Amino acid sequence: MKGYVLEQIEPSKFVLQMGPHHPATHGVLKLFLELEGERVARCRPEVGYLHRGIEKLAETKTYPQVVPLTDRLDYIASMINNVGYCVAVERLLGIEPPPRAKFLRTMVCELSRISNHLLWLATHALDIGAMTVFLYCFREREQILWFLEEICGARLTFSYPRIGGVRIDVEEKTLEKIDRFIDGFFQKIDEYEGLLTENRIWIARTRGVGVINPEDAIAYGLTGPSLRGSGINYDVRKHFPYDAYSEVDFEVPVGKHGDTYDRYLCRVQEMRQSAKIVKQCIQKMPEGSILAENAIELDLPPSGKKKLHPEGWSTGAFISFLKEKEPLLPEGEIYSAVEGAKGELGFFIISDGSGRPYRVRIRVPSFIHISAIPKLAEGQFLADVVAIIGTLDIVMGEADK
Amino acid sequence: MKQLLKKILLIDLIKGLLITLRTIFTQPVTIRYPKQKREIAPGFRGRHALVRDPETGKERCVACLRCARVCPSQCIYIGYKEDETSGRRVLTKYEIEAFRCVYCGYCVEVCPVNAIVLTEFYEYAAYDKEENYFTKEKLLQNWDEFLSLYKHQEYINKFWYLRGIERIRLPYEKRFPTPIRIKKEG
Ligand code: SF4
Ligand code: SF4
Image 1 (spheres, each protein chain N blue to C red):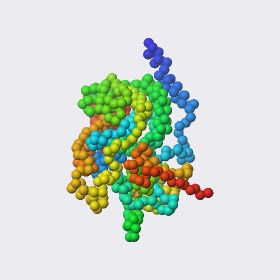
Image 2 (cartoon, chains in turn orange, cyan; image 1 turned 30 degrees about the vertical axis):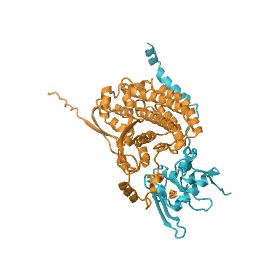
Image 3 (cartoon, rainbow over the protein chains, first blue to last red; image 1 turned 90 degrees about the horizontal axis):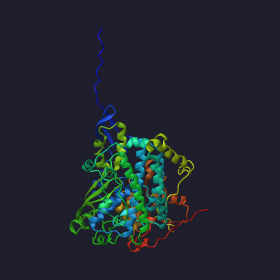
Image 4 (cartoon, chains in turn purple, yellow; image 1 turned 90 degrees about the vertical axis):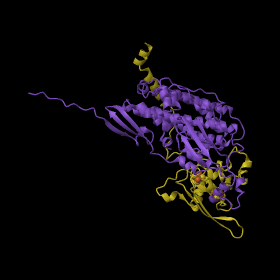
């Protein structure tokens, strides 16, 4: 009797399309995964599902009209996008906002950063399986959104900064409320940390997952907490200060190992630092104007120049005016970056003097972080891919523009 | 040794559980939305309305077209004709396509006579697309609807006069903010 020969099973690859509608992909990111058993052999991210052509659209708007467009980039912390754009245009046109505006902007930016990190912590923990943190984080995030609503009348799409300052002054009682909230907030951060930092399940799921060494992190162009988790101290707020960041005192937390756990620690520490900055801003808040003398008007061209034209102002008159007369605004080009909630957020703007940007290019951190997903995910378990997407803190509105 | 003891005694997990246990004794922060409603901050940018002037009972708009020009999404359509005798502009059409609006509030800011406003009314989801295409009559009706729900005696929108900006930089009408008095029937 002949013995049976077991058929040899070929280790074949299994292809899994993760997303674009997967709750853990934070929006409409699609990952094309080739699996060997449970290990990821190859990973290819696909982006572009949320492309709205913001850069191209910006070319058809005047400078003030682009501000609401930038809201739609990173909609979780849109205040920072607004400020980033306004800082870029101010540097281009040589406008210097008054001190009160600078402090107000710094304050709302840091509040936005806290709310972004809270949402990141909430969803990251939820992806990994910790439900409670999600509820706690949203409790505090809601309060921050209330403050921002009181300041500017919107909860997500703020359009609060203005080229040359801010739009509307903040009432004293709102500042007091924020101050009181920040006092209690440090204890809330301790609460999240009490739930996660020493928790063995959390450590098992995050330590040693998605490791990237400092050289690779720089080579991939990571910025923000994702870079600082690898131990590199780079922060636009410290190295190229804008607004009032040179006048407030804060530290830049850095990690050591460059894994998911260190990036988690970095962001939690960053929340503490942001809260400190908000507190200092409220203490040091100077009195005075909130809009620069030479700030450009909302309604371009400015009223002084409108009178020059005999036929009144239609779009046709506007264009012919530009062709014949001197430019409305200075010409030139600039790259200016701010520290977004996710990383370095840069705006490259060319002005041809027409009152509309000739070209806007936005350097968004999320898009660049997505390019690092294959590096982090290949060779890891499928379950860790979810942790890796979470730890890079990507938002597709920003990546796809 | 200490680490091992901590591990065996489940210190890390108990620490977390204590925090959740403490939360049981706190007040819930959530509200039951359709029944309970939260206070909306003054100046919230909600549904558009054309202000009905308490004296004339008509809209205040003078058809200067500033709002249509400044609107980033170009969703305000205005038509006007010129009055033969006085030379004033008379508004014939004022339409806002709310689906395209980005709720930036620029129109409220630039209007020289405080005619357009983003009210604090936010529950206007509709089954019919037509309902959120606001014509002039609909916009005036929005204003009445908003006022009927408004609790205070006077209304002034914070984007009309922009706190903190020097008065001299605002149009003449906006330099001296005059709130709208609300007459309530009954
Ligand atoms: S709020 Fe902004 S987008 Fe909406 S109608 Fe007014 S100017 Fe246009
Ligand atoms: S800016 Fe005011 S007055 Fe001018 S057209 Fe618009 S609503 Fe009417």
